[in-house]
Length: 141
Image (cartoon, helix red, strand yellow):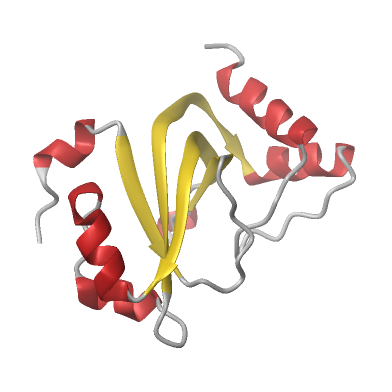
């Protein structure tokens, strides 16, 4: 299925996921960590967004509420659900960092902040750690 053209230039988007673990609360900032397993791939923080809203509901309800902001179909949201519920994270104002922060550098910042990062699921980071990552993303730009 092709991604609708307007999503690429939209100010707002939605991300669906399992409601477990549930650590997100709006308002907040999201850091986008990506991995690409092809040929050694990318493992880096590439940007951030402002989290506007977190909604936990049945997949069909989420689809009806947020379909204009995302590309997933009800079946995909259902696949992400746990016991019949999924989370919709509505976010806005995404900034792509001119400089991506690789995993090694991310771990360095976390160690400096005495924080253990587990990147398999969402977790809170301190204001200081977020600021260090954000500043690194714009350093040399």
